[in-house]
Length: 257
Ligand SMILES: O=C1O[C@H](COP(=O)(O)O)[C@@H](O)[C@H](O)[C@H]1O
Image (cartoon, rainbow, N blue to C red; front, side, top):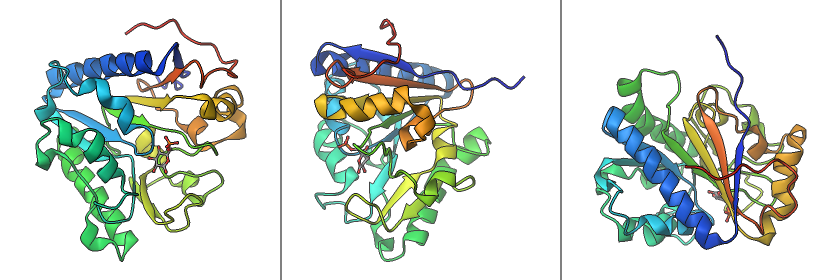
């Protein structure tokens, strides 16, 4: 029987330090479940403030880095060593500090930067080769997608009122007019986000307070982050600090792993 998506679970912590510790515990648990079932852990990472929040994973002996398959929830279409590249940020904050095999990290193909349609197609093919033969689903089912939120409620490179919000078929789409620079990007689409087993939004600091309240308390406004609702048994979690949740009325859950 069809079950509606579960409401988001909101965990709010006293400090950013506690948030990052609990986030690491959650990721390790998700990884351990995935590896014991399938031998691999598929994860999509965002850029922005997210990579820094993964710092408590770095020396954690429970992380089986060789089982991780890492994709990007969105990517700016710039060279991989550009300051705007999400890959570059993840490289500095995480990949350079942990033993993830290089072939398990899936950056964009920068030889295709002149043609974003081709570049998005190539990224979709990389996902197909990871997921389609193994899971035989219409859309990839990530074990975990880690997302941030922008001050306008965007997540990935899915911006308010943009035509990409209605994409129903593609796994990866491109955008050439991002309102936030740089303008050329690729992004996972809502069908992919909404087939994931777990989506975790991470938000810290006072600057996120206003938008977090709109996303959680007023989902009818239809901001991109409010539209992330994975189908059963998928679940959205919010890992935030008390500064970010200061204006939220949405019910906080008592933390449990
Ligand atoms: O442009 C982007 O912004 C969002 C949010 O970034 P944050 O710095 O406010 O956390 C990010 O999640 C996305 O990956 C990135 O491309």
